[in-house]
Image (cartoon, rainbow, N blue to C red):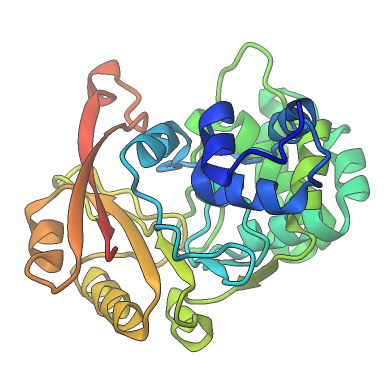
Length: 319
């Protein structure tokens, strides 16, 4: 069956994908393409190449069903998607926008993204040499980043992420990775097929190591900006902001709110994830044109099963 008589909305519904991605599919395939052709593209979508605490893969279905992505006014073909706290990039890989700018303060993560983009063959060869063994893990973990090439940094980063405890990324005050060895049945260290799909998806993407505030200099009216910062802690023992050596508490959260408002005033579509706490709710309450949505999430950080229950999060939008 040809898709010539279908719309982007029809494609979104038929393949259970978000409208932004469906719109690009609709514009990128020819009128003579069949539903089978579209299905092949959907099946070949890349997925995040790292496990990431706070990653949004589990929430994407709610984003779709609750209509939390920007409306049709955001055109993924002509406008740009910005994600200044990219992390595992679940939302980016869900949308796969044609024009995107990804950034993060975690330099090893950004090096890894760029190596996958530019040197995926060499990275795959390096990853295939790793073994799942505690002594070997500790040996790799002890290596100093400054002594490694970018390909070695990326290979080490993915290996430690895939074999470390709970997929955590945590560094000490010296910036040295310090997550203990994780116990898994048979962890996939090198997912070659997905790495190649990720590399292909990143070819036209701008990937930088920079502070999130730089988005104010590059985002234009009509662009879509998604913020997924380190969350404000829900209690005194839940803080997990060690993605970098810097913290992200009241002052930083307030500065981020101010950046959100400036982008709103600039005419950007803005979406932000955070914890459902009195502080965050107060921070974004009473702002003209800004809505605080509530979604349900699970947080598998705690090593005890009792600490992994469902909680609510906020998703702040200006549309």
